[in-house]
Image (cartoon, rainbow, N blue to C red; front, top):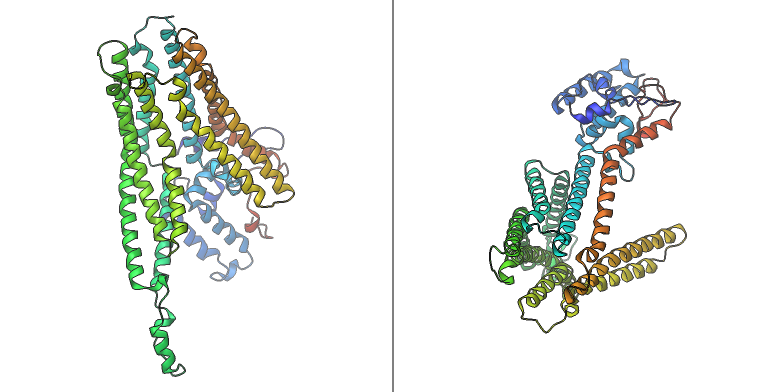
Length: 496
């Protein structure tokens, strides 16, 4: 029995509250909570034969008992519903069908809470690192950079532990992605079988069909989707796409570990240079970072190739439309990578002296482009929502969505470009401003991230239990240990 099961068997105190029953459905089937799927199936078959009205005439007047048995098996035979029932009872199963009900799954909520707490810890360690770095740069301390980088080493260890854990324990989200990909492949196979099926134009002539008409039908040109060379081309494209997707999947699996190793190498080379153990050029120090971007470029190229092949595969002769889709897909894939790489190359060129005549304002020009891109995206979103022509409450919801996006965009841009402006000032005039003041927007953003992620983790860990308790408190007329059965399973019978 897991820890979540122990938590789920608690008693809710207070007026009008009742205990969460997580054993009733197991009692209906006559099995214990640790029953295997095969044991559940055998128990269900035995009880179904015993209480089915068509199988047992004595059970004709007790159809509610058979409905209850069927409902118990429907819940316990589904792994997700069983996990929710083991923690929250039948009321949790009922609430799982609402918006956001996926969070009631203990695997999903526990995983998200771990991610939230880990993000809060990482934000706290980054605050410590930037605080130590600012004191060292502002000459308030003489600690070596190997000590100042200790919070970053700790973050590297946390990331390594997360990568190892993700490889040892399969992710629920990955399972969902695999199921969606399998479903998509099945749909593609169905479409392929329909397109390869014999068409009416190729059917032999019958007695009611004139011979001349049959010859005309056979000599008539086939549509593009039915031509043999088109089907062969589609098969080649499909094979190539699957091969590219397999290569991209393998690289995506190994990429996080490669990123971490190269990041640690970049940190080590930077510390060795700052502590004056070595005298390397800025290009040699930045080589691991450029290696990270190179791997990311190869991965994006593979993903883009698969997307382009998919678009060409479904083009069906419309070349102009498919070309526009390819251009948009390529721009969406590479725009952020191009900004990062161009900014890194300009900074390296400025520090190495190759761009000594450039001002830092020109060096940071790529950093201004994300604001333009996101502003255009917001304007397009607002135009699309207006073009939909919604009325009443729907229009109010759309306006609220646009307003939330504008507020979030304004807050993010304020923090981002305040830091960029202060950093340009510091780099242009090193003695004019302290690094601690430059990092004030970073400290505020990381503090907000730490607080928000901590609250989110607590809500995911304990807030869902309180939600179920409040839901049960709103049903004061229910007897103790009563189980909530969805309306579609309720019948007029005292057995339920």
